[in-house]
Length: 376
Image 1 (spheres, rainbow, N blue to C red):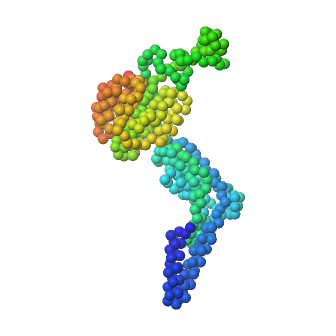
Image 2 (image 1 turned 30 degrees about the vertical axis):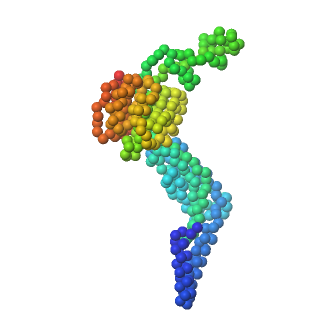
């Protein structure tokens, strides 16, 4: 296709040709013919398309916000030697310039370039757009190559220990098939598998069914860490403040999940993640928090906290000073309540029995969290 310069050259050539014909001067007509010839040659120059195979790698595929990530393009030329190529790879809304050197016939080149990781989210990378232009830049042809990939830019985190909390509200407690195996609470009967202890065999059921049955015991007393993030747009006039709030939520959730404790994360729009204390929970939580965004709604963080099951630790992340006054109404439902106020406009007294931390950055959060954990 013609570039703006190409269209301008064609338009000027047409005007010159018409003027030369109308006035009877051959010189303008000759210039016009030269212009038309240049435009036609440019179109013919860019008409052949290179036969390329493009494979894209991203390393790493998951990265914390702000950490480096690179794209690696492996470009193989399956046709004749090509030159005059410039390339741009799409990374979300950003176009990344890629320097593709001259490719000989049958040759392969690998090109590495930095990907933008300044903003959290699922960043689509690709397709690669190769631009072939003539020397005069009168025409160019853009072709897309390669299969798009996705870069996951996750929240930044700092190591945080799980809050000491948890009370045995009743002897047996609720259990499920997802509860971690243990020795405390009877959950169900199941068939014997090699490795089960014989002392767990339920002989009466085994005799009645003709199949060796064992008691399935679980630990039902693991404290749950509930993280409630205020995601109303009016609470976060500055986007960077909300990013810090998500980082704080991710740090609290990942810290508890890394210690194999159950974690639930919610916003006013509903549940974000709910884990039961298994391997890989921390990674799953970070993946789910990658897509969290502000969303309008009438429910505040405290309104959400009123609807979750009682028990364990509650961590409310907000900037709204009104939430701090209302959080006392849910204090009795949880073993420990912490309010993280992200870059508040002014300090405020903490309600009785509630830990309040003003968070200005993640390093300050880590230091304040250690003090909360040591407080009894």
